[in-house]
Amino acid sequence: MSETAKLELEGKSFELPVVVGTEQEKGVDISKLRSTTGYITLDDGYGNTGSCSSAITFIDGDKGILRYRGIPIEELAEKASFVETAYLLIYGHLPNRDQMREFSELLTRNQNLHENMKHHFEGFPPDSHPMAMLSAMINASSCFYPGLMGPASRERFQVHAARLISQVRTIAAFTHRKARGLPIIYPKPAYKFTANFLHMMFSEPYSEYELQPEVVRALDLIFLLHADHEQNCSTSTVRMVASSQANLFASASAGVCALWGPLHGGANQAVIEMLEAIHRSGDKGDRFIEAAKDKNSGTKLMGFGHRVYKNYDPRAKIIKQACDALFKALHIRDPLLDIARKLEEAALNDSYFVERKLYPNVDFYSGIMMRAIGIPTEMFTVIFAIGRMPGWIANFKEIMDDPKSRIYRPRQIYVGPALNHYVPMDERG
Figure (cartoon, rainbow, N blue to C red):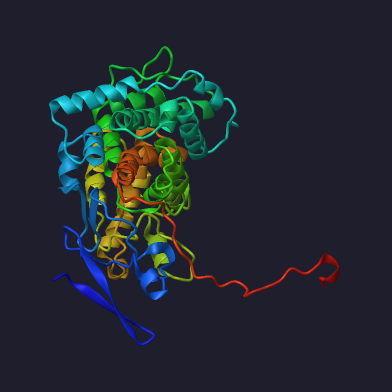
């Protein structure tokens, strides 16, 4: 007999089904609560509400576990590429050689934007935020593919998914070039995914960017570590929009808007700004640490702690090692990295931070790595969006593949005025 939960309301007892996931996560199914009892649940911010069942990503925040399709993030970071990981997330399994070749070729064939898209870039002011441009241009790009508006099919989905993953790089690079008044650099078919993005970002018409393996691998790892992260704000937004049967590009564009928020995708930029402020003040981190421990100082420690992880973010461990390796390979000395190490040491050893479980998260080191690569601070969240695209697409696919899928429509508890009536203008005080 299946386990149930008992709820008592107004002297009546109701049994609610208990659902158990493959990792023994337990939830109470309240999908029929309102029709059965007349009540709804109230969970401001959805912190305790499961919005869906998903087979894509598993997180155990207490144990510091992250797995894509059951595979630990540590294994993928060591052995896989971003493109291989994208395939895994979207299609549910690692690709064989033929599948990997076909997917890579599909990405290459769809990496160029329609030439008329270039005129859309001209309409933005030079100082436009790149996330605004990215969201708008993803939506605009969908207008050039009438098939997006037709009924969903596996063949059409494969092409559109590859087109979105590939073109988001092109849009991002063009956005960077436009903001700096630089000529657009087109993608090269011979280059792989991440190398091609670096080429489009930093090459000049008569002087190609020198691709260093350590830099390519570091950025590929950043993409991989950000590829999915369960039902966060932007992914939930993608699923919300997709549930209305909006097309893939519209859903992803909405995800970009959600990611843009400083409480979500802007955290790595905030880390760099914090480190720069510490450095400008002449502090090596000691004074800042003491100020962060004083609740009356107003000082915030950015890049530490996580809404889900109550242990060390597994991605932070991986990216810290990669950051050290990148700086060593490039022979870079960055005072910000020294300050970052001081802050990390305090967070891992100072009882104030340990007791509050304020461990470094992935944003803490990813910003420093991108700074070393030469990516400007305002592009950090765009890099996040490029990396997160496979996860958004995988979640979109789950919505489309579910025959029982219905439009998302949360309820609310109304707390406004009771029954009121219209008062004519002349009678209003």
